Length: 328
Image 1 (cartoon, one colour):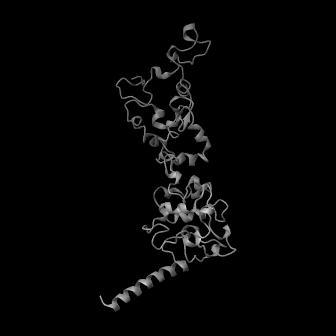
Image 2 (spheres, helix red, strand yellow; image 1 turned 90 degrees about the vertical axis):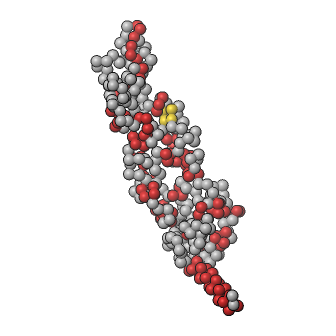
Image 3 (spheres, helix red, strand yellow; image 1 turned 90 degrees about the horizontal axis):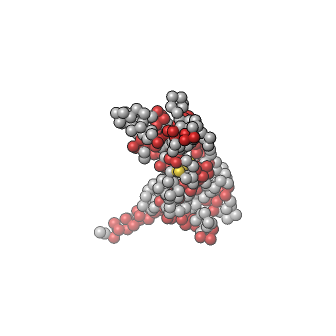
């Protein structure tokens, strides 16, 4: 290879580096960036993350926020062109917006940068736009108009970016994040009969889609029963003899999160059964202290052990030829 050819290659390489640096300084991103708000400015910093780290170092870290933690996350994967720190990315400013004005002396105010905090001048919808510019498709398609969006929630209310492991993305810690708002459900999971969420065997996202859904209660499946059948497939059927509540809606008998009664029942048997089944023609009056069958009272001998399921054991349906009464 001639000396002149070597020099031409070196000059082309230097020109390429200079073009990339100029594009970053002029704010010409290759990937979507956070929109600039009034007062933030439109100019990007010349040195990218190096400018930010001059101030946002370990000494500025708090118990809930670590600046350097971003380098442990997928956002900082240098080989991924989709990542803010990937080839041609704007690094910190890809999410926080143009930072030249914010980095100027005597201008380091949160009004000059999108901090993603609740006190930010950005509305939750504007903060979410920075995330949704990259994170599209999948379950996020139901975000707009969903319950969380309608309640003015921001992505950062649940997700943590400056960390190697986002708590809401782990089954072991997801429920703790959800429980910070859904306190009634957290209390239900502590009851004697509950889905094993606090044991770490289930997570909220096994049933619910946090980014929105067209189903009730943001369920993953179109109906409640289909959601339940994801685990309780043995109750799906079809069966020869159906029990109407089972086919219609599981919540007619069960509560989803937790109950003080066995099997997550909404009421104890026989009171639960008697909401639909009249005692007429069947001596099934609940026992009282003055009405025990052995004392000639009006109590039912069929309820000596306190439940209709003493006889009607197949309450979810039966395939037995003689199972019309769900007794076998």
